[in-house]
Length: 481
Image 1: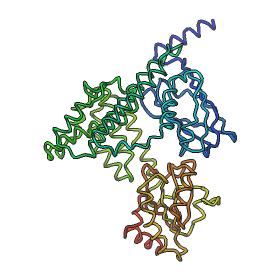
Image 2: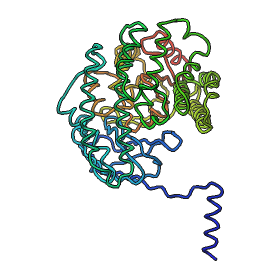
Image 3: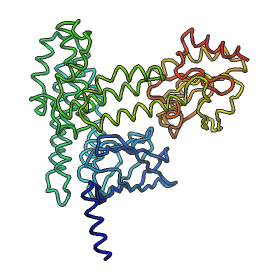
Image 4: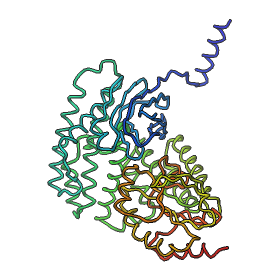
């Protein structure tokens, strides 16, 4: 009787479209010595193309173990957190990878990382390429090259990439059913990066429409000779992240060179997207286009305007799943922004200073706080530091205001080195876990925030320190009882 019930339940699940769990987990373990970070992030794309994240926690010895069912298809991923970066790892259900290396800094990890275990073959491509790059120590900045030099650079790069690809994938798959899939992905990634560099170069030079088109026609990688819109290419992260937006920009630039008024016509952007992309590629591009606009909204008012403006783009998406995801994105963004609206209590934080002392938001109660979110690698952030110092000096004797810089999305070693170079004399805090960056929706930096004496939000997107408005806002906040 029990067997009959189980069979009936199984039939019911199948008839109702309920998936039976047969997915294999992905297991990643290993040891990263000298890591300043004790929690790392690893990113996956789910079956619907939505980005999901898992965490990897390191013990005191740098050892870690992750078993996750969040991965449902073969894909490229990365492990990241500030200065610990292990990029272009190839993972799939059933893989069991072991990763080791010296994580003192990005360069050391790049030189010493090793990836072994079940399914590790595809990841050897990046390991070998990084070793070659480290040995060659080639400091060539491709974006500074002249056109002829860039073409030669791309040809030389292709020779090396093809050689390493042939070495890594020379032997049969040996039970790895995803090996050939990853070989195709890497080939497409390489051609995508080459095409991206060419298209990006055209943004930096002043060619006319004919010269621009001719240069692209002569140097287009084989994968894109028959156009860029191919649904099967969506397996490549470089294709999605670099080729599609740069190709749109390239075609837009041609229109601009031919007729500058054409790109200003109502509906131009959507019609151009429809002209260039088809099928799943069009859906993907439209979805990412809307996602970026949602992410760039810094107020409820701006988000409402974005939702209204983007509706025609959303309507052009054929996938119900993507439309639903975007609707959820608007809801999530609204919830985030509600937490930092004027008059709301500012999100609390507890962070260490560069001298090791712990500070939290409550320590500043009774003071106006002008916060600077920045990172050592952020050029615009560091360019604003002299203005920030000048502004803080004006209020140096005023005990009713505090100036606080918080490093976000940064490595501790790099942060401390930047402090030695910049020599700021106001409070410096470090957001190691990314809590402040998330709570204050710091999608872009530098970002300036003003909090009143009661610890409530005064400005989520405050003026830059060099502006007259910043000083006036601070004075107005001080004057309030």
